[in-house]
Amino acid sequence: MQAIQAQNLVKRYGSVLAVDDVSFSVAPGEIFGFLGPNGAGKSTTQRMLTGVIAPDAGDIQIFGYDLLRCPNPAKQLMGIVPEMANVYVDLSAWNNLMFMGELYGIGKKTRISRAARLLEQFNLLEKKDLKAKGFSKGMKQRLLICMAMMNDPQTLFLDEPTSGLDVQSTHLIRNLLREFNARGQTIFLTTHNIEEANQLCDRVAIINRGRVVAIDRPQNLKLTLQSLQSLEVAFSSPLQSMDILYSVEAVNEVKKTGDKFRLYTNQPARAILSVVDLARRHNLEILSINTLGPSLEDVFLRLTGGQEKRGAHNASC
Ligand SMILES: Nc1ncnc2c1ncn2[C@@H]1O[C@H](COP(=O)(O)OP(=O)(O)OP(=O)(O)O)[C@@H](O)[C@H]1O
Image 1 (cartoon, protein in one colour):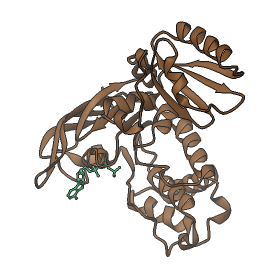
Image 2 (cartoon, helix red, strand yellow):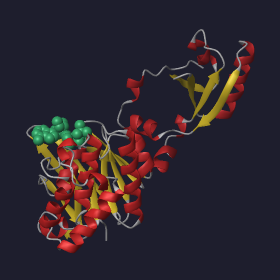
Image 3 (tube, protein in one colour):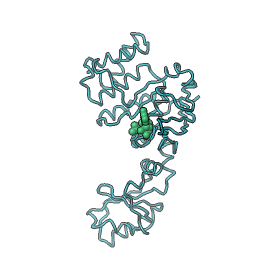
Image 4 (cartoon, rainbow, N blue to C red):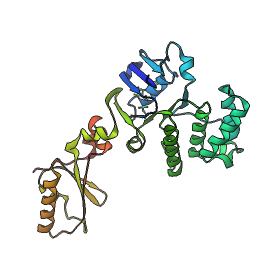
């Protein structure tokens, strides 16, 4: 049985086809990422999966329960952190959690012990009696996740969980999601942050303009793009012109990345020899040279049609 099974989901807003025939499944215990650019349909999909809005067509099963026809048992298995949610700012962190616990019908003893454990894990225990009004964005987001965890859900849905947060909160949230997952919890998260998907997810669906364009493990997605292997080269002094790099053999694209250059090639060994030769001819000292596989960002840009936007240069070799 799958934790989440989405079949042929469709959602329109007037003339906008926000989600266009989306199907995928998430196995129990997986961290599944839904990755896409702004407006791709990520939040709309999450809102359908969590029963907030109904799809125009399609089916959703959560651990075998039909969400559309029989929502309650499916919803009881979920913890939800929506994109635009807020905590109750006039309540303390503790009372936010007590309130959620009561909504879920959790007994007092369990409510208290669970709230104390969650606040400690999310580094909020010391602030438990302060009103959430004074909390930073990162603290509010951590409290929101605690609230979503109060019913000890089998599947946690998070919409852009670390978007716009400080480094510490981001780090803490990602680590705790890994910990929850290690204890068997399934996690569905939408993100436009490629590095987040790469670091956290067992599998990723890439969504673009309402359609899923790829689903696989991040590593497999990278392997599909062997033509995006590259060399990263740093020279000890700045180049007078990047143009000389276009003469490197077997290179089909050159990009400047900070103080380094990235030369895309499907023949890295040949390109390395050619770079060394070029450095000798132009009296340049190579500080470092590394071969890199395609990044998830490369795959994402290729699949979502974003590659042209990078200002890529075609070498004439
Ligand atoms: N309530 C709504 N009414 C009308 N159009 C909507 C509504 N919600 C979303 N849309 C449109 O549906 C499309 C998908 O939006 P959605 O919010 O699902 O994308 P997203 O991938 O989550 O983007 P973001 O990361 O910017 O939140 C967009 O074109 C958006 O403008």
